[in-house]
Length: 332
Image (cartoon, rainbow, N blue to C red):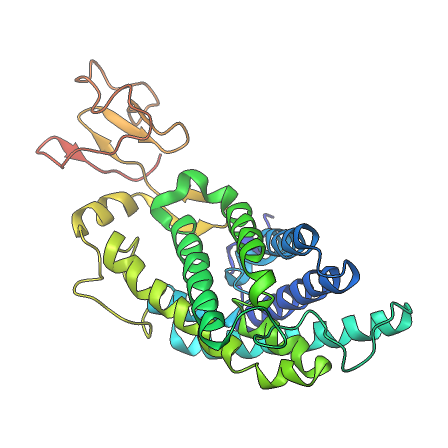
């Protein structure tokens, strides 16, 4: 008998556990590399980026792989998840970051790395604790988070399925690049949970400055979450309980969105599973090769003498407007 578990969607407990574990690993690896390397720019930046890549590939299919309250807020404003899930995700992410920071602190103490409670633990800050003043730190964190969310919303857009399998890699590289810019100024947060996770083990300025590294990433994420669907439309209707809902689903071209999604089922992380074929004038759209091929008759033989294929020879072309000859039938 075939295993039916693959068809069962993840439970909310599984999603929250995935967010907890992913944020735990992000803090432990990223902040651990920063402390042990002496905040080496390249080592720290790539450590955060690689941690995101491996956790997104591991748990993205379960929870979406946010590992960051700012990402959850931006996703909700873009219509990707509900605000109810944002609250639950943020709580799991923050707990995961705190546990990650604690385990990192214990590990550093046990390894005699020269770190003690109260010393900076890859903490964020400005002024005496960083190289930016208050206003500069605020702007840097807002802009960097905005860029990060734009990348995330773009590469996880269902209409961008050609690179779906590489989405975690693109997100990880974006996070690494962001750290290269921000480490010298603020230590780079762009993640309230990551900042909370280590601040309370660092003490002093890290706690006093913590408010900025909660507020600024949320502002940057909110701006991206609103601007992306307004500018590029939505890949699908907004999730119930999310916002903001602009017009009829927020798409600048509802017909295009409907045609794009027609014939495709639920997205599995990294690829789209076809649900029913798109057939027009004797030609069928093949999502695997991204081109039109002769349609199959019920007996398995190709349809006789179809008209020239629409957009034939153009890889990745899309179906033309439906005509009188268009039919969509269930798979054989």
